[in-house]
Length: 194
Image (cartoon, rainbow, N blue to C red):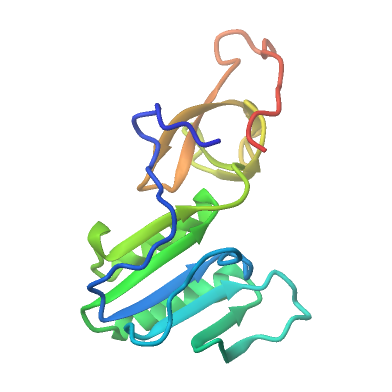
């Protein structure tokens, strides 16, 4: 469970459509992100659902499912590339919904901010693993999918203590060398982020 007590920890909320939006674009890290969710269609503003299929054999492209324009992508980077193009030509009134893990959410938010969207124009819902992206403050390398309290930096190889401080600018948790004072003196490594 994501801890609400960490001051730098972003706050997430359950998925819900914004009532005043001109158009809705749901961007999800997984194609099953809206499973068991009530998504109204019909008289509402246009609604699109973009998701990463996660399977290179799965069909990609646009379809209409239950009245919702749906587009599947083979990778998150493919989705982000298309989203970049979309946001560059988008008019005011689009509401963006991001559903996924923390690193995916903040990659999308960083892109949205580049195109002038503010926090009132997007809605964030955490769904999936609590694995962390860790930023090494020593060599500035990102290490993805960290599940333990101590991680080995993918860049410099330092033993990093994974702090609970989250940087929205970097889309990552801070990692500091745990054995900086006494080389090799590393606390027990524990699985803490499933």
